[in-house]
Length: 253
Image 1 (cartoon, rainbow, N blue to C red):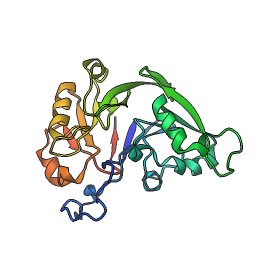
Image 2: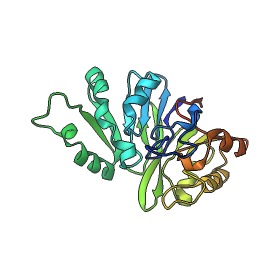
Image 3: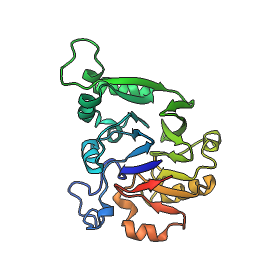
Image 4: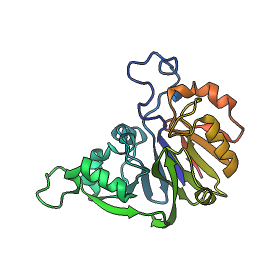
């Protein structure tokens, strides 16, 4: 299995528009972060986790030519507003499969009503196959995928476990029962927004504490803001098995 970090930034991305913060002015390519998303590939399958405002750029940058579906963690703009940019895939492949909680699907239908219409459709609109997710395992490309429920502030969000790989973003808290689903993973991806505490995201201290509880062989931090600091500086201070993810990083599980 190969995972490509399509984007590792928070909702504004890095650099932030108009910001003179030193990280926003960094010339290190690892400090330039598109909105958080990942491409997970195995055998002949390619699935995207979240489809935000940088989706088109991310697909061009990684050279992805086909996708088998999109898994949504939640409905916030930085995770969903790239849906219209599935059109080239739709024109080439036909209907694109999307996997999401019913609340997320409701939000998508409101925002992208033309995608979900069944009558009098605009000829250039993409079309989707809808799969409503519950907090139960489901089958995807010959694998059993396990949803992991967390809280993003008060909002319920899904992460996903693919075999020995687990991807979580926009997490602030999680029940012991859900954490048990992540035990024995080889690779854990989890959000670490900044140094200071935040009401709906792990900060760095909380993310590292969470990783220490799960005990993966490797962990990667994502959904990062400029307030976390320079990539090179933060990476050097992390525990030996914990890494700061960066855009277009590819890892193998």
